[in-house]
Length: 270
Ligand SMILES: [Zn+2]
Image (cartoon, rainbow, N blue to C red; front, side, top):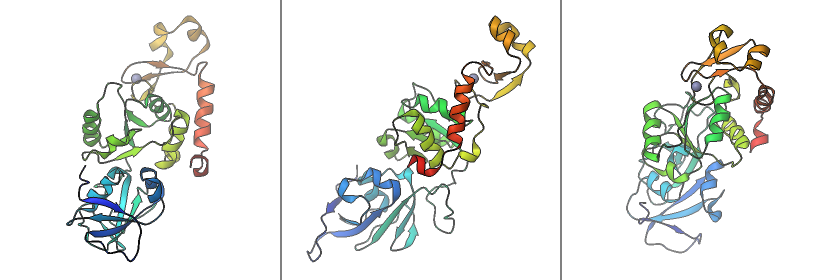
């Protein structure tokens, strides 16, 4: 952590400091990462020399992938902007559903391709998102460097409950999942990335992420239990792992979950 050159100062107007200082204000969910006294208010940070805005923000515990816009004295800047004495810095989270195109976005490319990679602790969230048709890469034996490499290579957004993973300088797109309950996590991700309109339920294999395709009953008949063969006529097959799907006993329960998620509004999640 490059924090030696950065320390927090209490608000005490009139007192003279030998070091330089800048005033910071973080907006919306970025406050989740700050200490209590720093949330939703302007606070002062002291520093030596001219650290980059990124250095100071990282030292405060806010992962850079969560940030999409930084204003210094009202002007949008990049992460490498050197900090000067007396600067006023406003830091905003990713505006997935707002148009801020006239300003400098910190991402190299917009996050409109909705593909995710999830850390090893989010297996249930993976299944929920795949059920809704979202492209989710997941393996329960991935380590952090593997997740980061794959995220960069395939332009996938990292979803994690581990803030330290997002602090890694190699992370380009990432989001810290706040909710603990898997059901609430699905709702949170839908809202955060404005995905309701992109739901394509029952189009993806929940086990392996492969696409599902309709298949003739005759083609899979020898793989079915006798009762399944007798009562069902519509089947789908995973184009990757060849698992066969049909609207069996669990279907109604899953369909109800899909309906519930599809009706979500921001107020229900936040
Ligand atoms: Zn599959």
